[in-house]
Image 1 (cartoon, one colour):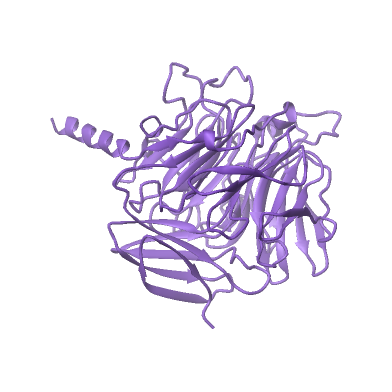
Image 2 (cartoon, one colour):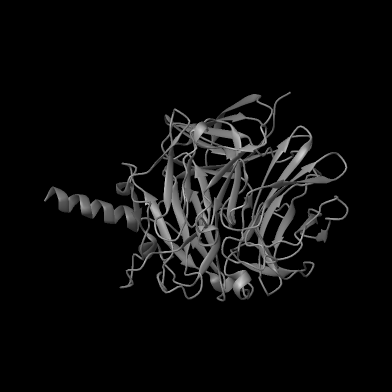
Length: 492
């Protein structure tokens, strides 16, 4: 009887999360193309005109990339954008430090920086900024800031010019460092076909560049990588860096254990690997019982392994516990993997176990999904969802979870080159529960966000925010009322 009651409780917890399909409110757009667009297909989520409503810039593959401006009420309209095809991904960031968000377009061909004007207008700016977009097949991006300015990291996939490829023909990756006048290029070698990269604090607390690589093309002599920007080298076993080989597709990073250190979710073909950050600065693999492996389709009778792409943590019911969305879909027609592969929504329970909830929530679609994002598109304090699909229309879902609890959205600004305070840590404490998030650019699969960090507060009406700014200074902001979006700056 007790077991039956626990099952009923788990079902009730799953049924709490609910989304409404509003895909018809998006302009028609799909990520299209052949082999060079089997991967990629990301979406940038950011407020391009200052109205506090997130807008979208979607990669198109063979189709032109598309800008979609949020009109309110979960309705989006197409807006002018310089025409670029071959776009695999898009990431928002303020490259030039003028306060307006720009966009990095990743492409099969020359990558492009689009400079934003703060009114959803964009113009190519690579030449003006001294940025060499190269001619590679780019599939991953991240950025950090040093005292000199931005450092842009670009992950490249298979070297299309290698006559012996595509297998064991992974291209090198690139760092672009601002020297005050232009971006100077450095080569990161060896490259192992990166599909996601992320500058973030690792388990030791140091900011490093993590690269998740596709074993399908490096085949044998490769692995996941971690690069130390200060020392200019990749970490190895002597640093405690475990050699991990998987079909790496996406990275998500967030503290889910409450110790202030960010765990890392790595999507793949087959098991999705969650790495738990330890106090010793090392990572351990999450036990299967945690519920995050998401290794096979959870509906239908196809027992073949799943293919995970974009992963993102977000508190979809505002109960203070981060949940996890994973976009899934077959690369194309790979026979050893599930063909109808439903997307995954893992809702974290009070005991820390993640429970598959996508069917009850209404988001278990089976297109070939690629990029995605959890963001509050209508400003009601609940995280909504957008999903990019390959050769199928985009999807948009409003979070209509009943009895959602309190929330706080925290956005940072500071003077200088790093206007969005990338690298800052935000700790929010409410009713004795502390959550930590880092402001980052990168990760996911071929797309990312620039906007407020969303914190569920549970039943708490007030919270305290502690911000560790990129320069190491700390500010404390007490007595913050819940259910609002706030903008914080350093105190001088």
